[in-house]
Length: 130
Image (tube, rainbow, N blue to C red; front, side, top):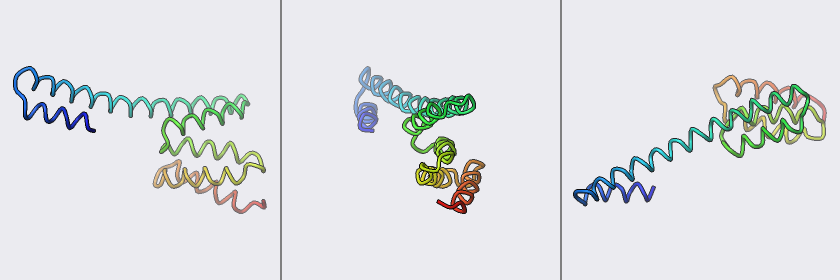
């Protein structure tokens, strides 16, 4: 953000080549910010897909590692929390963590298919005896 401010100051207060440098600097910073956001989202989606494949193999530990990596790459990605919660719900000892992840998925995915599926699974888990 401060670099964008510096680029704006260079553009408005300078002249000639320095003004052009301000434009180039601003475009570069904006391009970097957008690409970083897009790459993080694409990486998170890829990790969730890979985790789902590992779940089908069955490699549950590998699947969980991928879901956790997706959360690390994109902390607001509801699908990663949902699939991690579903994976954890397979073991009784991980029930508390499963509920926490599904609650996060329901909150982040409010109004989406993932959000409603997370809510349904939460109701099912809460009905079960600990």
